[in-house]
Image (cartoon, rainbow, N blue to C red):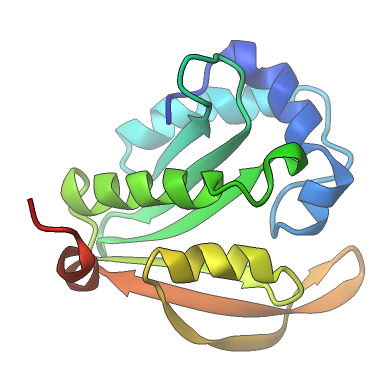
Length: 173
């Protein structure tokens, strides 16, 4: 994980703008509008300073190019956050979403003093649910027809984890 830079904007637009990525996420548009990646990246510092978000690029060690993103939308007043992530199609199934999300949860529960983290995925995207399960998140239910994606109502699966669950599952050193 590393912070995004404006130099990543072209890759963000190209990778996140893939129809397959937009199709399986709740909030990524397709087509990805020109200028939106730059605007999104520029929002990170202020969002972090306000304790409202923490967003990081996923990039293999030794390579500058990004392959995805992990982030939290934080409700500091309630010490809760929503986890989100996306990974470029060419890197699907290699564990990057799990590895990046695990590091982000460590950061959130440790440095940000978050008490609870929740995440959601479209039911037709079970790979995203497997990431949540690997993180030790508890399945909390399905909201039927909770969102409308491209004119079709979608069921959404919800997961959550508490700091106590995370600490109990952490390997002892």
